[in-house]
Image (cartoon, rainbow, N blue to C red; front, side):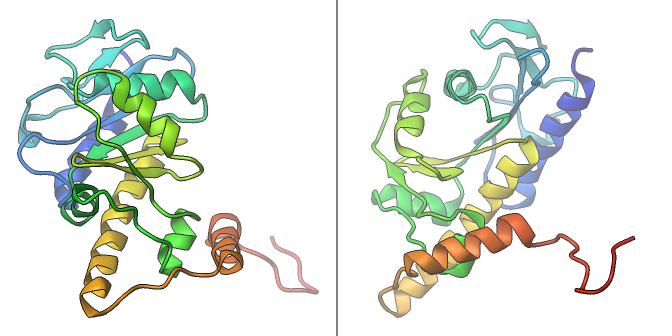
Length: 224
């Protein structure tokens, strides 16, 4: 079996979608790219999550040719592949229909940076791209036209796509999009939300991305 490690990683990430209440039935998908071969592992089409295994993940090349599979690839494969072909820094793509984030997409609204959690994780508003018909690489094209510096994007009247330098980072972005979308929606039931100042957004993003979770020795001591 090809790309066993990546198959395991993509399988686990796909299983994390229902575990985090980001999908229902067979919706949503995760893919990962192997930087060495350029091959992509993606969820099979129409298979229940309970029936997924590392073995039935589908391996395709960047042109969409099936290299190894027991099932057909996800119907979103062309969109994932377009992103990989155009963004060498991306090795993981996640697509969900998570309820609160998709509610923003249903009305064509971006999620503003009105929480430090959004500033930390994304550093920018989570944009909403125009509606695109499902089924070919046009979704991938529109994602890259509108995602900017974000790692997440809402597709109008469709759902959520996230990207990452790894599968795990793309998955984390998908989980966080839904979490902040829920909080922002709840806040909007109380009143209007206020976007953080640009300098606060930048400061929070810098702190979280560059220093959060890292050990820094106290002045006058040395780390060992």
